[in-house]
Image (cartoon, rainbow, N blue to C red; front, side, top):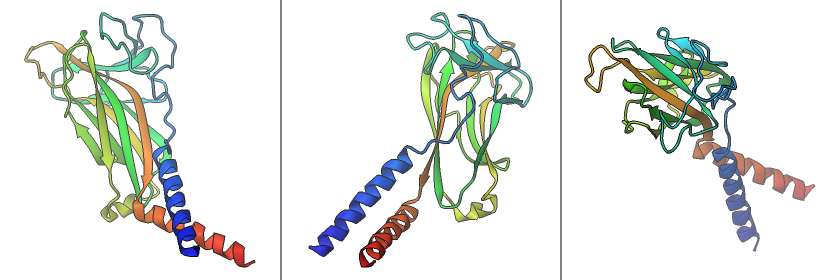
Length: 225
């Protein structure tokens, strides 16, 4: 009976830790780009609160309409971030350095919704997860949504001991327009939109097992007392 009780505690502890890990989101400033509040079809230029411009000028917050996307105008809230530039092959976009630091034994999942609005020809995109300015995982233009539609980008990082030198360094997210004339429209401005940015941490199974065993040891210690 005692063995069954211990196994039940182990299973319950692992389940609780797994559920907790799945829900462990990392804070991102203005992740849905709802700051600032904009009127319909209004936009900002070179101003995305909480984010910085990277790779050149050409990004802002945009309150999109059914003339830009249909049927989903914005995946989260009312605004999205847009990026635009000439088809010069130079990537530009926005980035945010997070307060969260890169942790050993931890996996990360970054999700972003990527849009292809009617306003621009498709430029291609790249979603990057970095630590101390080093790219540790990316989605390099694996999606090509139809015009006026969105696609879900997922970037997954599994901890690698080779990256141990980055432990304790700040994590960063970059959302980039590749500046490529993918649609074959020379001389036209190209662009891509992003929305609903989320980053979750998931401790590796070995780490969760150690935590579970530690919890069981504490239960046994309390029982003896």
